[in-house]
Length: 249
Image (cartoon, rainbow, N blue to C red; front, side, top):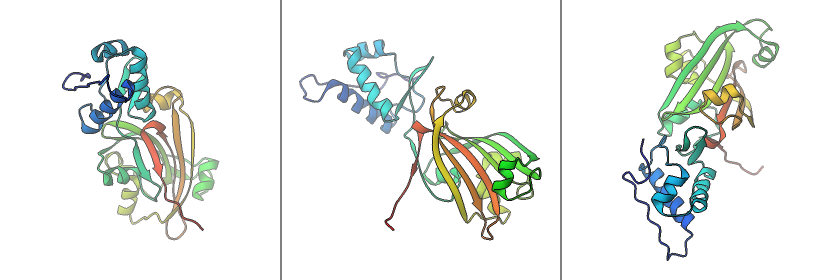
């Protein structure tokens, strides 16, 4: 695994008025943005890296903390400090995460964790406008971008809308598959929130236990006002953000 110093040159100017920690963090940031430090690269531990750069441990710790705050590095127990991609910015629009990632130039990937038909719970039935206990399609998927896990998604649809095809569900966005069936989302109600990750969510998303997750709950409707999908998704907060434009009314 690549380490700072292997093809990466960080120089500090002790005569400069710019603090040493800032010089180090700026050069590391440029290396991350320029591809010199790729996502997944693990940095040396603080003692070795401080010796490599000939700076004190508090100076190095402050430089690393600045990049952690920016979401460019993450500290993981048992692994140390690891480079992560720039946070994904997603517009708030009636679109699927798969389509948004692809249109932004990222490479999306989907792991289908489960796909089954089950009786609608009272909560799901009320949101989809179906009878309690009627069959619905329940999906659980893990979505990644450029090899980094971003989101754990649960979706529920009336059972007659979409066949349970594992290959299609693993390679295409849900809304794209619905459109191939002549079903087009036209409007949605959604709520955005935040909470702590459960142990299972943290494990699946390769995030620290108790990490902050952004949450989205959405019910989408077609042009006739029929509910076609209810989704409840969670996203790792330091890898993901919603982008909104606001206008005065």
